[in-house]
Image (cartoon, chains in turn green, brown, yellow):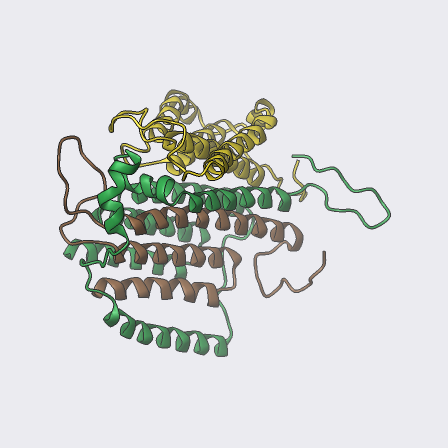
Length: 182
Length: 112
Length: 148
């Protein structure tokens, strides 16, 4: 899979540029380029649902990131200065990559998945749910309670963001609590 | 098998950015890169060579599909990463309002 | 801080295309069981169409016009609908997709049991929740520190 490796190299280069740039706006644009390369990889790996979701979610994240933070008056970032921190981080990453090399040898060969659980979904999916999109039939048919948990997580995140950006906090003990207003 | 190793390199770039940078926005960028790497790894596990996307077409018999189960799990994971990253960005905005900086070495007072 | 929005070209193009983006999002939600997409991607696209409108016309004008009660209302309607489909299926002995809506022929919209209803509920919840997040994160003022 030559094109898969090439686009993966593009994503790695874009991520590396995003980490090392001093200008914050350029770093955020590099992350956007990495996400776009990832969307193309998902299309090569025959996953169109994931490609659509990845693209629009990344667009939304970048709009929030640029609009809410970079309009402040700190456009440049200074790099870290601790020597001990650098040595420990690089050591940890080298250990992680070498252990990862041995893990990769134990995985099944790329392109021959095990598919022990999905054999049932592939053969019975169309008859039991009558939905021709198998990913939707798994997500909302066979494993719908996981989707219920995910909807709860999204709801909790919305409530948390609204609670963090409150106008007035709680007053001290003895005074009345302030009413929350959107 | 070399694609798995490239994916681990992407994860280590994200981890390096979370651990080593001083600016809060750079830490958030590292978090986003870590989540990209993990979602990609799950989909790489379920790929079948010369497979087809898991959609039925009218009037055709499809026998050779890629694994649809990791794709359903990664769809959940992408939406949850959106939720947590939006919350972390809200925290960063609040920190800037209170301390007037994004530098994590200057945020030391833990007041309410 | 440009409270009057962007230039005239951006405003005109936004006015021409934001309806198409909204209808495209609804299309992806409703055909979630036939073609790739589903409730989550469609919900985010619907939220992005409102974000586009707000970015082009400036935040002061649109803040006056959006009734903020609707955002909370739609989100709770979506959440309660999805929860209702889950709990009713659980309590009547069947699994999620078996019980009250009949399964028609494949490749039509009204097929596949409760899956289109779940997609619509999820799209309502996701779109209004994400637009509420965007509204809150953008409407703070730079100088003072408190959300208006």
